[in-house]
Length: 368
Image (cartoon, rainbow, N blue to C red; front, side):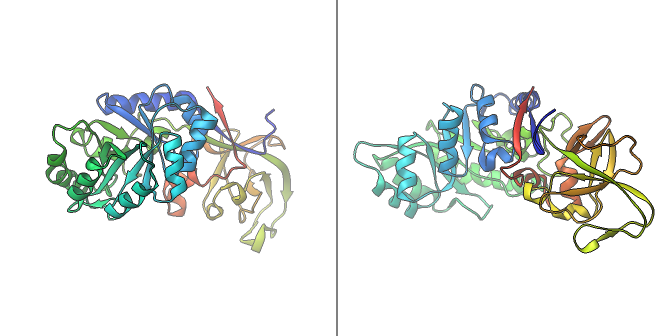
């Protein structure tokens, strides 16, 4: 019996399957696998070790994540740090670990250049804002930034990219961004050997082959989850299953309040089970309204407010339930399945937040 009170199983074969499917869908171009936010909650080191021999790049959000991937997971592939960085320690560490830094505006490039010593070179990618209105150089200012970087002896420009704002649910608007990129960015780099990459998970499937270019950047799809509920991707296999154990089973009569605030009161005799998981593990408290878990292949509804460390469920109609039994909060049990996308829909959020919200005390365990 596994000793953990709550754990996440990371299905490595499902990860392999999704990678192969994405590679095929992207026409075999280079793959830049996203490791940010602890690999979308799936365990940065587990995912990095599994994919290091297969991907062409990794991407992270922070320099610290890149260092973790190199030192703890043995990553040998290039790592792109997304988002603008401009602190001296970030640049010094990026040079030390041979990271790729994203440039988003001219002032950032000038600031960074001051931190690079003579004879050193920093690998960089330029992000162009084609309509996301977040990070990235304004498309009208791109030529100035490009000229500065190309003429600086301290920068080695490796790639140019953009990011789509609506590829998951409004691909028509994403295609407008793509057209801007093609018309207002690509002419400046024609015949230059830069890696052009624009497609995230949603764009790979929703925007089409014209968004593929030289490399794609899959994130959520790599973990078997659709970028939005409206996207039907049945070929993907969820990688993460979240499980806990029953620690107590109780028979209660009618009129009993359960949990903080007595948000639930029994109206009939019930059998309830207490699970060793709560919002202190990243299991969303808001699920107490409509959430369910799987026990012995059947659905058991959550009753009472989810506590920091405990969750109570109704097992009246599930026979032979006992302490030590496994409860599946995300994943399959028999013919039933609860997905991160289902949980997200119940509380008005997205599956990204469900998986990235799992906290460090939930051990990630790789399984074949």
